[in-house]
Length: 466
Image (cartoon, rainbow, N blue to C red):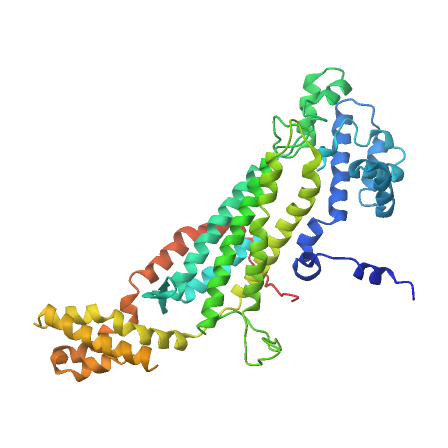
Protein backbone atom coordinates (compact mmCIF):
# COMPACT_ATOMS: atom_id res chain seq x y z
CA UNK A 1 0.00 0.00 0.00
CA UNK A 2 1.40 3.39 -0.98
CA UNK A 3 2.26 5.85 1.76
CA UNK A 4 -0.40 8.58 1.74
CA UNK A 5 0.65 12.14 0.99
CA UNK A 6 -0.09 15.06 3.31
CA UNK A 7 -3.40 15.87 1.60
CA UNK A 8 -4.57 12.25 1.61
CA UNK A 9 -3.52 11.93 5.25
CA UNK A 10 -5.71 14.94 6.13
CA UNK A 11 -8.63 13.30 4.34
CA UNK A 12 -8.20 10.26 6.58
CA UNK A 13 -8.98 12.40 9.64
CA UNK A 14 -12.29 13.88 10.71
CA UNK A 15 -12.81 17.48 9.68
CA UNK A 16 -15.70 19.52 10.97
CA UNK A 17 -18.15 20.30 8.16
CA UNK A 18 -18.55 23.74 9.72
CA UNK A 19 -15.14 24.55 8.25
CA UNK A 20 -14.75 22.08 5.38
CA UNK A 21 -18.18 22.80 3.82
CA UNK A 22 -19.85 25.94 5.07
CA UNK A 23 -17.90 28.62 6.96
CA UNK A 24 -16.51 31.71 5.27
CA UNK A 25 -12.74 31.88 4.86
CA UNK A 26 -12.64 34.95 7.12
CA UNK A 27 -14.43 33.34 10.06
CA UNK A 28 -12.51 30.08 9.67
CA UNK A 29 -9.26 32.07 9.82
CA UNK A 30 -10.39 33.86 12.99
CA UNK A 31 -10.42 30.50 14.78
CA UNK A 32 -7.37 29.05 13.06
CA UNK A 33 -4.18 28.16 14.88
CA UNK A 34 -2.26 30.76 12.89
CA UNK A 35 -4.57 33.56 14.03
CA UNK A 36 -4.70 32.32 17.62
CA UNK A 37 -0.98 31.85 18.17
CA UNK A 38 -0.10 34.94 16.14
CA UNK A 39 -2.33 36.89 18.53
CA UNK A 40 -0.53 35.37 21.52
CA UNK A 41 2.81 36.56 20.15
CA UNK A 42 1.47 40.07 19.63
CA UNK A 43 0.21 40.17 23.21
CA UNK A 44 3.63 39.07 24.48
CA UNK A 45 5.21 41.82 22.36
CA UNK A 46 2.85 44.47 23.78
CA UNK A 47 3.58 43.26 27.30
CA UNK A 48 7.35 43.41 26.75
CA UNK A 49 7.11 46.91 25.25
CA UNK A 50 5.08 48.13 28.23
CA UNK A 51 7.43 46.51 30.75
CA UNK A 52 10.44 48.09 29.01
CA UNK A 53 8.83 51.53 29.11
CA UNK A 54 8.36 51.10 32.87
CA UNK A 55 12.04 50.37 33.49
CA UNK A 56 12.46 46.61 33.33
CA UNK A 57 15.77 45.49 31.75
CA UNK A 58 14.46 44.78 28.25
CA UNK A 59 16.48 45.93 25.24
CA UNK A 60 15.45 47.37 21.88
CA UNK A 61 17.19 44.41 20.26
CA UNK A 62 14.93 41.98 22.11
CA UNK A 63 11.82 43.91 21.09
CA UNK A 64 12.94 44.03 17.45
CA UNK A 65 13.63 40.30 17.46
CA UNK A 66 10.11 39.62 18.71
CA UNK A 67 8.61 41.96 16.10
CA UNK A 68 10.50 40.19 13.31
CA UNK A 69 9.17 36.75 14.28
CA UNK A 70 5.51 37.40 15.05
CA UNK A 71 4.31 35.15 12.24
CA UNK A 72 7.33 32.85 12.03
CA UNK A 73 5.57 29.99 13.82
CA UNK A 74 6.96 26.45 13.76
CA UNK A 75 3.72 24.53 14.37
CA UNK A 76 5.45 21.15 14.29
CA UNK A 77 7.83 22.20 17.06
CA UNK A 78 4.95 23.68 19.06
CA UNK A 79 3.06 20.38 18.84
CA UNK A 80 6.12 18.47 20.03
CA UNK A 81 6.62 20.89 22.93
CA UNK A 82 2.98 20.63 23.97
CA UNK A 83 3.14 16.83 23.88
CA UNK A 84 6.13 17.03 26.21
CA UNK A 85 4.98 19.87 28.51
CA UNK A 86 1.21 19.21 28.47
CA UNK A 87 0.68 23.01 28.39
CA UNK A 88 -0.22 24.83 25.19
CA UNK A 89 0.84 28.32 26.30
CA UNK A 90 4.27 27.23 27.57
CA UNK A 91 4.74 25.17 24.41
CA UNK A 92 4.33 28.33 22.35
CA UNK A 93 6.51 30.33 24.73
CA UNK A 94 9.30 27.82 24.06
CA UNK A 95 8.60 27.84 20.30
CA UNK A 96 8.68 31.65 20.18
CA UNK A 97 11.85 31.65 22.27
CA UNK A 98 13.50 29.24 19.83
CA UNK A 99 13.25 31.77 17.00
CA UNK A 100 13.90 34.72 19.36
CA UNK A 101 16.92 33.53 21.39
CA UNK A 102 17.85 37.05 22.55
CA UNK A 103 14.30 37.73 23.77
CA UNK A 104 13.74 34.26 25.24
CA UNK A 105 14.24 35.39 28.81
CA UNK A 106 11.59 38.11 28.70
CA UNK A 107 8.80 36.45 26.69
CA UNK A 108 5.67 36.05 28.86
CA UNK A 109 7.50 37.79 31.75
CA UNK A 110 5.29 37.86 34.83
CA UNK A 111 2.19 36.73 32.95
CA UNK A 112 -0.19 33.79 33.24
CA UNK A 113 -1.54 31.66 30.41
CA UNK A 114 -4.86 33.52 30.63
CA UNK A 115 -3.26 36.82 29.60
CA UNK A 116 -3.42 35.53 26.04
CA UNK A 117 -6.35 33.86 25.89
CA UNK A 118 -20.76 42.02 12.50
CA UNK A 119 -21.36 43.16 9.37
CA UNK A 120 -23.18 40.23 7.71
CA UNK A 121 -26.19 40.65 9.99
CA UNK A 122 -26.48 44.30 8.94
CA UNK A 123 -26.34 43.28 5.28
CA UNK A 124 -29.09 40.69 5.80
CA UNK A 125 -31.29 43.35 7.43
CA UNK A 126 -30.55 45.75 4.58
CA UNK A 127 -31.46 43.19 1.89
CA UNK A 128 -34.68 42.24 3.66
CA UNK A 129 -35.53 45.93 4.16
CA UNK A 130 -35.29 46.47 0.40
CA UNK A 131 -37.51 43.41 -0.12
CA UNK A 132 -40.07 44.69 2.41
CA UNK A 133 -40.15 48.10 0.77
CA UNK A 134 -40.66 46.57 -2.69
CA UNK A 135 -43.60 44.42 -1.56
CA UNK A 136 -45.04 46.75 1.10
CA UNK A 137 -48.38 46.98 -0.76
CA UNK A 138 -48.74 43.42 -2.08
CA UNK A 139 -51.64 41.78 -0.19
CA UNK A 140 -51.16 38.22 0.98
CA UNK A 141 -53.13 35.83 3.12
CA UNK A 142 -52.15 35.96 6.77
CA UNK A 143 -52.00 32.84 8.91
CA UNK A 144 -52.60 32.23 12.59
CA UNK A 145 -52.26 28.63 13.82
CA UNK A 146 -51.25 28.10 10.17
CA UNK A 147 -54.92 28.59 9.30
CA UNK A 148 -56.14 31.39 6.99
CA UNK A 149 -56.59 34.67 8.85
CA UNK A 150 -56.94 38.32 7.82
CA UNK A 151 -54.85 39.69 4.99
CA UNK A 152 -51.47 41.31 5.53
CA UNK A 153 -48.85 42.28 2.94
CA UNK A 154 -45.71 40.48 1.84
CA UNK A 155 -43.66 43.47 2.98
CA UNK A 156 -45.32 43.61 6.41
CA UNK A 157 -44.63 39.92 7.00
CA UNK A 158 -40.98 40.52 6.09
CA UNK A 159 -40.85 43.38 8.62
CA UNK A 160 -41.63 40.87 11.37
CA UNK A 161 -38.49 39.01 10.35
CA UNK A 162 -36.47 42.23 10.24
CA UNK A 163 -37.69 43.28 13.68
CA UNK A 164 -36.26 40.13 15.25
CA UNK A 165 -32.95 40.62 13.46
CA UNK A 166 -32.76 44.27 14.54
CA UNK A 167 -33.15 43.14 18.14
CA UNK A 168 -30.30 40.68 17.58
CA UNK A 169 -28.14 43.40 16.02
CA UNK A 170 -28.71 45.64 19.02
CA UNK A 171 -27.78 42.84 21.43
CA UNK A 172 -24.67 41.94 19.39
CA UNK A 173 -23.51 45.55 19.48
CA UNK A 174 -24.10 45.67 23.23
CA UNK A 175 -22.22 42.41 23.81
CA UNK A 176 -19.31 43.65 21.69
CA UNK A 177 -19.17 47.00 23.48
CA UNK A 178 -19.34 45.32 26.91
CA UNK A 179 -16.36 43.04 26.23
CA UNK A 180 -13.22 43.84 28.21
CA UNK A 181 -9.73 42.45 28.50
CA UNK A 182 -8.96 40.28 31.48
CA UNK A 183 -5.96 42.52 31.99
CA UNK A 184 -2.44 41.87 33.27
CA UNK A 185 -3.14 40.29 36.65
CA UNK A 186 -1.06 37.14 37.13
CA UNK A 187 -2.01 33.70 38.36
CA UNK A 188 -4.92 34.46 40.72
CA UNK A 189 -5.78 37.96 39.57
CA UNK A 190 -3.92 39.78 42.38
CA UNK A 191 -1.04 41.16 40.20
CA UNK A 192 1.41 39.90 42.84
CA UNK A 193 4.02 38.78 40.26
CA UNK A 194 4.06 42.18 38.58
CA UNK A 195 4.21 43.99 41.91
CA UNK A 196 7.30 41.91 42.70
CA UNK A 197 8.84 42.70 39.30
CA UNK A 198 8.42 46.41 39.95
CA UNK A 199 9.69 46.12 43.53
CA UNK A 200 6.42 47.08 45.19
CA UNK A 201 5.69 50.10 42.98
CA UNK A 202 1.88 50.05 42.63
CA UNK A 203 1.85 52.99 40.23
CA UNK A 204 4.02 51.10 37.74
CA UNK A 205 1.75 48.06 37.90
CA UNK A 206 -1.28 50.26 37.21
CA UNK A 207 0.56 52.01 34.38
CA UNK A 208 1.49 48.63 32.89
CA UNK A 209 -2.18 47.79 32.46
CA UNK A 210 -2.91 50.99 30.57
CA UNK A 211 0.23 50.62 28.45
CA UNK A 212 -0.67 47.11 27.28
CA UNK A 213 -4.40 47.51 26.79
CA UNK A 214 -6.13 49.51 24.09
CA UNK A 215 -9.54 48.90 25.66
CA UNK A 216 -11.13 48.46 29.07
CA UNK A 217 -10.09 45.73 31.48
CA UNK A 218 -11.91 44.07 34.35
CA UNK A 219 -10.91 45.52 37.71
CA UNK A 220 -11.20 42.16 39.45
CA UNK A 221 -10.67 38.66 38.05
CA UNK A 222 -9.47 35.29 39.20
CA UNK A 223 -6.99 33.50 36.99
CA UNK A 224 -9.53 34.03 34.19
CA UNK A 225 -12.23 36.58 33.54
CA UNK A 226 -15.68 35.49 34.70
CA UNK A 227 -17.04 32.75 32.49
CA UNK A 228 -20.41 34.52 32.62
CA UNK A 229 -18.99 36.66 29.82
CA UNK A 230 -19.14 33.59 27.58
CA UNK A 231 -22.79 33.14 28.56
CA UNK A 232 -23.60 36.69 27.49
CA UNK A 233 -21.90 36.31 24.12
CA UNK A 234 -23.29 32.89 23.25
CA UNK A 235 -26.78 33.87 24.44
CA UNK A 236 -26.83 36.59 21.80
CA UNK A 237 -25.68 34.15 19.12
CA UNK A 238 -28.26 31.57 20.24
CA UNK A 239 -30.98 34.23 20.04
CA UNK A 240 -29.82 35.06 16.52
CA UNK A 241 -30.12 31.35 15.71
CA UNK A 242 -33.73 31.38 16.90
CA UNK A 243 -34.53 34.38 14.69
CA UNK A 244 -33.01 32.80 11.60
CA UNK A 245 -34.73 29.47 12.29
CA UNK A 246 -38.11 31.23 12.41
CA UNK A 247 -37.43 33.22 9.21
CA UNK A 248 -36.26 30.21 7.25
CA UNK A 249 -39.14 28.08 8.52
CA UNK A 250 -41.55 30.71 7.18
CA UNK A 251 -39.74 30.67 3.83
CA UNK A 252 -39.96 26.87 3.72
CA UNK A 253 -43.72 26.97 4.39
CA UNK A 254 -44.22 29.68 1.77
CA UNK A 255 -42.22 27.60 -0.70
CA UNK A 256 -44.67 24.75 -0.13
CA UNK A 257 -47.49 27.17 -0.98
CA UNK A 258 -45.52 28.26 -4.08
CA UNK A 259 -45.85 31.90 -3.02
CA UNK A 260 -42.17 32.61 -2.34
CA UNK A 261 -39.03 30.64 -3.19
CA UNK A 262 -35.39 30.97 -2.30
CA UNK A 263 -32.87 31.37 -5.16
CA UNK A 264 -32.46 28.27 -7.31
CA UNK A 265 -29.36 27.81 -9.43
CA UNK A 266 -29.72 26.97 -13.12
CA UNK A 267 -28.19 23.49 -12.75
CA UNK A 268 -29.31 22.81 -9.16
CA UNK A 269 -31.05 19.47 -8.57
CA UNK A 270 -33.92 19.46 -6.09
CA UNK A 271 -34.41 15.69 -5.91
CA UNK A 272 -32.60 12.76 -7.51
CA UNK A 273 -35.93 10.93 -7.90
CA UNK A 274 -38.30 13.84 -8.62
CA UNK A 275 -36.70 16.18 -11.18
CA UNK A 276 -39.52 18.76 -10.98
CA UNK A 277 -38.81 19.59 -7.33
CA UNK A 278 -37.33 22.86 -6.11
CA UNK A 279 -36.54 22.18 -2.49
CA UNK A 280 -35.72 25.08 -0.12
CA UNK A 281 -32.33 23.53 0.67
CA UNK A 282 -30.63 26.71 1.89
CA UNK A 283 -33.43 27.53 4.29
CA UNK A 284 -33.33 23.94 5.51
CA UNK A 285 -29.58 24.24 6.08
CA UNK A 286 -30.12 27.41 8.09
CA UNK A 287 -32.72 25.69 10.27
CA UNK A 288 -30.50 22.66 10.78
CA UNK A 289 -27.46 24.68 11.85
CA UNK A 290 -29.52 27.20 13.83
CA UNK A 291 -30.72 24.36 16.05
CA UNK A 292 -27.08 23.46 16.72
CA UNK A 293 -26.25 27.09 17.50
CA UNK A 294 -29.12 27.37 19.98
CA UNK A 295 -27.88 24.36 21.94
CA UNK A 296 -24.34 25.70 22.34
CA UNK A 297 -25.36 28.26 24.98
CA UNK A 298 -25.82 25.35 27.41
CA UNK A 299 -22.04 24.85 27.48
CA UNK A 300 -21.05 28.23 28.99
CA UNK A 301 -24.02 28.09 31.36
CA UNK A 302 -22.72 24.86 32.84
CA UNK A 303 -19.08 25.93 32.68
CA UNK A 304 -19.69 29.15 34.61
CA UNK A 305 -21.63 27.28 37.27
CA UNK A 306 -18.78 24.86 38.09
CA UNK A 307 -15.76 27.19 38.19
CA UNK A 308 -14.23 26.75 41.65
CA UNK A 309 -12.76 29.74 43.48
CA UNK A 310 -10.14 31.51 41.32
CA UNK A 311 -10.33 28.99 38.46
CA UNK A 312 -10.51 25.33 37.49
CA UNK A 313 -9.33 23.90 34.19
CA UNK A 314 -12.50 22.04 33.29
CA UNK A 315 -13.54 25.10 31.28
CA UNK A 316 -10.70 24.87 28.78
CA UNK A 317 -11.55 21.92 26.53
CA UNK A 318 -15.22 22.88 26.47
CA UNK A 319 -14.51 26.49 25.47
CA UNK A 320 -12.18 25.42 22.67
CA UNK A 321 -15.14 23.66 21.08
CA UNK A 322 -18.24 25.70 21.88
CA UNK A 323 -16.89 29.23 21.32
CA UNK A 324 -15.40 28.46 17.93
CA UNK A 325 -18.42 26.44 16.82
CA UNK A 326 -20.84 29.17 17.91
CA UNK A 327 -19.13 31.87 15.86
CA UNK A 328 -18.53 29.58 12.89
CA UNK A 329 -22.17 28.45 12.90
CA UNK A 330 -23.49 32.01 13.24
CA UNK A 331 -21.28 33.04 10.33
CA UNK A 332 -22.59 30.19 8.17
CA UNK A 333 -26.30 30.78 8.74
CA UNK A 334 -25.97 34.55 8.33
CA UNK A 335 -24.04 34.17 5.08
CA UNK A 336 -26.61 31.67 3.82
CA UNK A 337 -29.51 33.92 4.81
CA UNK A 338 -27.85 36.85 3.03
CA UNK A 339 -27.64 34.72 -0.10
CA UNK A 340 -31.32 33.79 0.26
CA UNK A 341 -32.42 37.38 0.87
CA UNK A 342 -30.57 38.58 -2.22
CA UNK A 343 -32.60 36.31 -4.49
CA UNK A 344 -36.04 35.70 -2.98
CA UNK A 345 -38.61 35.07 -5.72
CA UNK A 346 -42.24 36.16 -5.23
CA UNK A 347 -45.15 34.77 -7.25
CA UNK A 348 -47.96 37.39 -7.07
CA UNK A 349 -50.41 35.37 -9.18
CA UNK A 350 -50.21 32.41 -6.81
CA UNK A 351 -50.72 34.75 -3.86
CA UNK A 352 -53.70 36.34 -5.64
CA UNK A 353 -55.28 32.95 -6.33
CA UNK A 354 -55.04 31.95 -2.67
CA UNK A 355 -56.59 35.25 -1.63
CA UNK A 356 -59.49 34.65 -4.03
CA UNK A 357 -60.15 31.32 -2.34
CA UNK A 358 -60.43 32.85 1.14
CA UNK A 359 -61.42 36.49 0.67
CA UNK A 360 -65.15 35.90 -0.03
CA UNK A 361 -65.58 34.48 3.47
CA UNK A 362 -63.63 37.41 4.97
CA UNK A 363 -65.80 39.87 3.01
CA UNK A 364 -69.11 38.65 4.45
CA UNK A 365 -69.13 41.34 7.16
CA UNK A 366 -68.49 44.01 4.52
CA UNK A 367 -71.35 42.62 2.41
CA UNK A 368 -73.72 42.71 5.41
CA UNK A 369 -72.77 46.31 6.23
CA UNK A 370 -73.23 47.38 2.60
CA UNK A 371 -76.71 45.80 2.56
CA UNK A 372 -77.67 47.58 5.80
CA UNK A 373 -76.56 50.90 4.27
CA UNK A 374 -78.73 50.07 1.24
CA UNK A 375 -81.78 49.63 3.53
CA UNK A 376 -81.62 45.91 4.31
CA UNK A 377 -82.31 44.20 7.64
CA UNK A 378 -79.11 43.04 9.33
CA UNK A 379 -80.55 39.83 10.78
CA UNK A 380 -82.14 38.77 7.48
CA UNK A 381 -78.95 39.56 5.60
CA UNK A 382 -76.81 37.69 8.13
CA UNK A 383 -78.93 34.55 7.80
CA UNK A 384 -78.84 34.59 4.00
CA UNK A 385 -75.05 35.09 3.97
CA UNK A 386 -74.64 32.27 6.52
CA UNK A 387 -76.56 29.81 4.33
CA UNK A 388 -74.73 30.83 1.15
CA UNK A 389 -71.35 30.63 2.94
CA UNK A 390 -72.03 27.09 4.13
CA UNK A 391 -73.01 26.05 0.62
CA UNK A 392 -69.82 27.57 -0.80
CA UNK A 393 -67.73 25.92 1.92
CA UNK A 394 -69.23 22.54 1.02
CA UNK A 395 -68.16 23.03 -2.60
CA UNK A 396 -64.60 23.79 -1.46
CA UNK A 397 -64.24 21.06 1.16
CA UNK A 398 -66.43 18.24 -0.12
CA UNK A 399 -66.17 18.67 -3.89
CA UNK A 400 -62.70 20.22 -4.13
CA UNK A 401 -64.10 23.12 -6.14
CA UNK A 402 -63.41 26.85 -6.08
CA UNK A 403 -65.03 29.22 -3.62
CA UNK A 404 -68.23 30.33 -5.40
CA UNK A 405 -69.77 32.45 -2.62
CA UNK A 406 -69.72 35.66 -4.67
CA UNK A 407 -71.35 33.88 -7.61
CA UNK A 408 -74.12 32.79 -5.25
CA UNK A 409 -74.52 36.34 -3.92
CA UNK A 410 -74.77 37.62 -7.50
CA UNK A 411 -77.44 35.02 -8.26
CA UNK A 412 -79.59 35.93 -5.23
CA UNK A 413 -81.99 38.81 -5.99
CA UNK A 414 -82.04 39.74 -2.29
CA UNK A 415 -78.56 41.23 -2.76
CA UNK A 416 -79.40 43.12 -5.96
CA UNK A 417 -79.00 46.54 -4.24
CA UNK A 418 -75.24 45.91 -3.91
CA UNK A 419 -74.51 43.77 -6.97
CA UNK A 420 -72.77 46.72 -8.58
CA UNK A 421 -70.52 47.21 -5.55
CA UNK A 422 -69.36 43.62 -4.98
CA UNK A 423 -66.09 44.05 -6.89
CA UNK A 424 -65.03 47.02 -4.78
CA UNK A 425 -66.07 45.18 -1.62
CA UNK A 426 -63.62 42.41 -2.60
CA UNK A 427 -60.61 44.62 -3.29
CA UNK A 428 -57.78 42.89 -1.34
CA UNK A 429 -56.03 46.19 -0.59
CA UNK A 430 -59.03 47.26 1.51
CA UNK A 431 -58.39 44.30 3.83
CA UNK A 432 -54.71 44.99 4.66
CA UNK A 433 -55.39 47.83 7.09
CA UNK A 434 -52.36 50.05 7.69
CA UNK A 435 -49.81 47.37 6.78
CA UNK A 436 -48.20 49.43 3.97
CA UNK A 437 -47.96 52.50 6.20
CA UNK A 438 -46.51 50.41 9.03
CA UNK A 439 -43.81 49.11 6.69
CA UNK A 440 -42.81 52.62 5.63
CA UNK A 441 -42.74 53.92 9.21
CA UNK A 442 -40.80 50.93 10.55
CA UNK A 443 -38.14 51.08 7.83
CA UNK A 444 -37.74 54.84 8.13
CA UNK A 445 -37.72 55.20 11.91
CA UNK A 446 -36.08 51.99 13.12
CA UNK A 447 -34.35 49.98 10.41
CA UNK A 448 -32.53 52.57 8.31
CA UNK A 449 -31.13 54.41 11.38
CA UNK A 450 -29.89 51.09 12.84
CA UNK A 451 -28.00 50.41 9.60
CA UNK A 452 -26.34 53.84 9.35
CA UNK A 453 -23.07 52.76 11.09
CA UNK A 454 -22.69 49.98 8.51
CA UNK A 455 -23.32 51.95 5.31
CA UNK A 456 -19.74 51.59 4.07
CA UNK A 457 -19.98 47.79 4.43
CA UNK A 458 -23.26 47.10 2.65
CA UNK A 459 -21.72 46.04 -0.66
CA UNK A 460 -20.88 42.57 -1.88
CA UNK A 461 -23.05 39.57 -2.60
CA UNK A 462 -22.66 36.16 -1.00
CA UNK A 463 -21.82 33.29 -3.32
CA UNK A 464 -22.23 29.95 -1.58
CA UNK A 465 -19.82 27.12 -2.29
CA UNK A 466 -22.58 24.60 -1.57
